Image 1: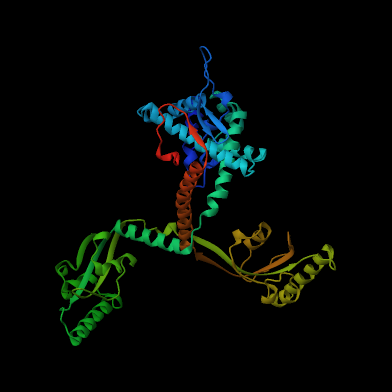
Image 2: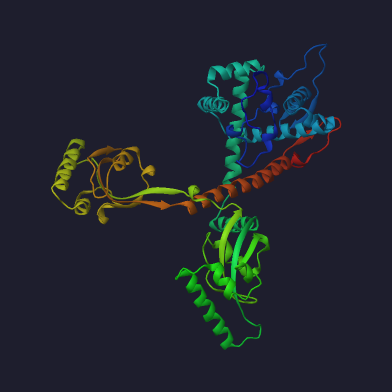
Length: 473
């Protein structure tokens, strides 16, 4: 449950959820999907109020720690306040069992994190709290007042954030490190996605068919193929209207309608069309292909549905083909002499010297010097700030002034500029992320179950009922 802005009096109650303890898609709880975890609060904060004091029973022994009944009562109350009728319909023992299971998983993860020596600094906690405040569109003063208004001290909040960050670090070490997404995984994912999208898409088609008998000999096949080739040439090269040619020449059932097949769902396409139609653009005419009833061509009139990305969603990146000369101060040539050498080289370039020749003779960048300083095609946004700024205003053929970077003194020359379509790379990156989240969820659930199965857990809650999220036990 994300910690989002809610009415002041319910801001914290909306986030007091232990559900994040079983989340695995991001490798465990994180402050981008933050939930305050009542199961991790100090026993001293969870005592009953009002009336005579009663013995605080132990409802579970978890490793070398315990869960007290007061903690469980508080956690259940917080869940009820957050979820309302959604949980009030559940039998009390079922809800209490589910909450106890999640508290147990929290305790086990915290114990494991402490065993591994995982630590969270005060700076990390400060950054985490600041991030939560930003997610709620509050400055720190407003957020502090909201926390106090919901009855929680900032110290308690800091402890909750610390625990969440410790578990997040633990999961990155023990779960995320096991997640591997290969290129073959991405290929299969995209292939399956493409099939699903094709099935959800509909196509408006026209078809021109030259029929061939099942027992046609080679001469008949050759004549039919030559005929449809001539018809396609008339349409594509000579500008004849597809519908008119189909109406007069097609031997298919749609000829009278100019070959119009109407709208066909992607999952209802005839087998002969499944490899042809999805790859067509609107208005495009296919190559000649063989179907069960003869040779044919189709024209895609329109497409609807599916997840076909429009042109404005294409990912285009700016690239620059550049050369550079890098001069580094060293034991023989101090900073001042290095800067003077750069000045001399810049003057020679202004006088017409060949950039590549000077780079081969003087550049200290061993990776590019032998190639005349050739950096290849680079994306400026991926370069250090100083280099990016120099390249921003240079036209093809222009040379920069001398500028200083962390590596030394540089001069760059822009050879060319272009825009490159990076849609495919972006799609693959998105697929890799989705697969990583999916595998993280699976690994996370297996890891939690193993953690629970290998731990000492003694549940003493009357009427406890094991739940699927308990991870065993």
